[in-house]
Structures are given as C-alpha cells and as structure tokens.
Amino acid sequence: MDSPATPTWPQRSAPVFLDGAAIASALTAREAVAAMESVLASGFDPETSAPRTRVETGSGTFMQMPASHGQYVGTKLLTITPGNAGSASPVIQGLYVLFGGHDQRPLAVLDGVALTELRTSSVSVMGAKLLASPGPKRLVVFGTGVQAWAHIEAFAELFELDSVDIVGRNAEAAERLVKNAEGLGLPAAVAGPEAVREADLVICATASPTALFDGAMVKESAVVVAIGSHDREHRELDDTLLAKATVCVESRDSAAREAGDVIQAMESGAIAGAADLITLADLVLKRREVAADRPAVFKTTGMPWEDLAVATALYEACTRHDYEKWNN
Image (tube, rainbow, N blue to C red):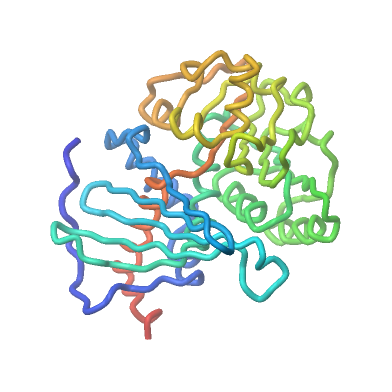
C-alpha cells in the first residue's frame, strides 16, 4: 500500500498535550468516522493490525495497543485497576502517544480515556451507518455508563432519531441519561428489554456476562451494536439473534480472539464460521452487501488502528486551529 504524502508538521520543542476537554472540542463523531473510513478506503487491512498486549500487574492490568499507518505511528497505554472503584482514582487510566514523519519524532500525547470514549462511539456509529437503511430511527440503549451517553450523542449526530429508550439496572443513572437525551431535543424514556421489539437501532454498552434480551424480539430491519464484551466468556447477544442476523466485525481475527458473542455463537453453530462474518472494510470497499430481509449485528471490541486514525485526526485538527493554548 502506498503511503500518503508526508504531512507538514510545525516544529515544536515538545509534543502537544491534548486533555479530555481538548479532545471533546477538537473533533466530532462525524469527523472521527470520516478519518477511520479514509484509512479503510486507502486499502489498509485491519487483519494485519497488531493485537493488543496485556500484562497482569499487582493491582490489575496494563495494556498496550500499537498501530502504524502512513507517516504516523502510535500506541495507547492503559491501566485497569479494579481496586480503584469507589475511590478518587478512575478504574481505567491511560495515555496515547503519537509519533510522525520519517524521523518518527513524538508529536502528541493524548488523554487515553477521552480518546477511547470518542473512538468507541464513533466506530459504533460508523458500523451502524454502513448497515442501516435510511430514515428516522428509534434508538434503544442498554447501559447507563459513560459509553451509553457517548453513543447517544454520536448517534444523535449521525442519525435522525425519533426517540431514545434507556434500559439499565441503575434507575437513577437511567433517569439521568433520559434528561441528558431530552437536553438534545430527543424524546426519551426509561424502558425494559421489551423495547427492543420496536427498535430500529439497539446499542449494548454493558458489562453483562450473559445475553441482555431475547434475540427473537429483534425486527428484520433493525441494527444491533454490541460493545460490552472483550473476552471469550462474556456476551451481550444470544444465539437466536446471531443465527438470523448479518454479523459484521472489525476484523475476523480480532473477533475470534476477543468477541465473546461471536466466539460462543461459532462454538454452538449459530454462526457457521468466520467466512460468514463481514467486516467494516468489506462494507466501506463495497465487497459485500447487507441483506435487507434480516437484522444486522455489529460486534465491536476496538482495534489499535482505530485509535491511531482518530488520534491522527485530532492532532491534525489541533495543529490546523492552533490549539497550543491548551498547553499554556
């Protein structure tokens, strides 16, 4: 694959630092989607993306997610510390370090958690846009955490939403999301799993180890996005749904390693094999079509190339708009 033309970067004595506020201000979900679609359209093959690595520590887990594309290379570094729950320190903390040019000099350090929040919701809405039919949508969201809200914002930006239903175990958090959605001008309500019956778009953003709803309830035209499981043992979707749906993943290799929903469905025979899966690249490059007479599932676990694409877009946006004031 030919590398893109080398960007012209301003000379700095130290890398730019982009905190959460800078990241939220610098790039929209639509722009993040465009950045990732551009990488796929260039011919980049996610199947070649380096897998994330993890090291178990005395307090939790340390993870590294490196990637390279064109004149950029970078890695995300995260710690996951379960013992921080309920304390002043977050459970997940991290940084993204971006390098560029033939000399591979450090260009930027980004808040890794804020980058992940933007990247995750943007990947989800990218997959949903590629799979969904046109028209207004009723959105159902399972989960009440940070990613649930990030997804509502991203989907409201790229879809015309008729309504939003929130399904969650924490009633107070669900009500808070309802009010936030109403603040975007969206009709919203707390609902139960049966709301799936009328949903056009379903987002699953939970830590549930088992399926959240009966897949038989999902209508033929619906798109279901599942982001919660990242290992073989956890799943948010049942075999009933996965057996009847078009199933899209970021890459077949990463899904076989990390997507519990897909792994368990292949083990049970609900999905015949990896060849039955389609990928984001298949859709962007129009190598596969989506059947109109069955629901679609997008199972995402996140990949390092996506972080790099969004980090690159953030850095370029900041240098274009002279955001150096954030470092003063």
